[in-house]
Image 1: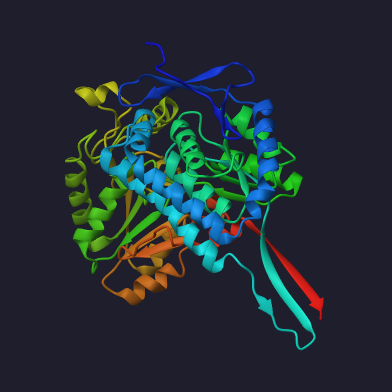
Image 2: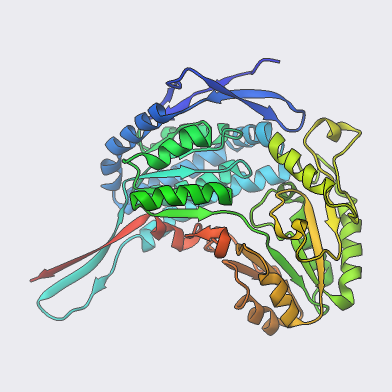
Length: 471
């Protein structure tokens, strides 16, 4: 089957063909049939995009915060008005179920609304009192051209998570989405142009990491980078950024713990564990994939999670894995780890057998040192471990190279908050506390550094300048 369409780069407010003349295929993971093709970008395409961004950045930065905010609100309006198209484009390359798509598109628009508001309230600096005869103040100034490299698991959402604060602060952006899931980001850029974002302020170059991503990170015109993806790629980009002396935000995944104590609301805790399995088929960096349960209720909780997992329906409650490589990786890990309480492999019959679907899988009472307990699986896989007391729960929670998120469920709120302050993670939810657009998001340890979301992200994309004058 031939591709139904070809999608060019978006550079300086226009569709731009790839300099190489080459195109990359995509795949519908629901059916494994070919999808659209995207431009295979490289250094020449990146250079065109950075040049356009450099031309546009000063005019955009020169607008008042209120002026930039008005454009961001119009972008959110455009996204909400064309939500069905955005959902369709995401579904074609990710296979996500409708509820997941709606959640992600709605949140993507919320990023633009939120940063349109906070840039007006908190995007300015402050006056520093130094006595009569002086005037000293600080300014938040944009970096200039920012490079944003996003992954395939939450393509539109994670693009907007970086684009909205970067644009709000007056930067121009060159985005490089995953070659597997580029089309919704391209459509977003077109919507932004229609909404009044000046040409060149947002550019999208598609292509692979080694070709387009590496060229973007190395380009001398790019003064800041943001990356979400694997630890291995994050390390390489960190080395490039260090050599160029430019700042970098890294969000590199996790192996996050969900702690359940015997006095917790077990119904809600079990529901949270099942959500970790089903949401985006486990392809979420913040998924709480390690279920740590107090010994006295461990088996009960596991039995309830297994029963709920076995009721999950592919294509209804969860989607497929998004890439063939990830599908093969997850199945290989499951094949090397026998003894699942449920799941443990692919679907072999029915419509799900055509696509990249993996059965929701639970491994109970796993050795904390086992590979399945330590590696980020990035699939619908949950491992459980019992603990005897609070000290052992904390030790197990922190026994990981990652530190992205954690969750604690306990009838003793004091214990929940005490553990939250001792768990090595960038954000901790106690008894289902909400982590939203307003809450800063980022990792400890191997999960990376820098913060996205919340007010903290706005200031990630700004340089702080001090001005002091004698009057």
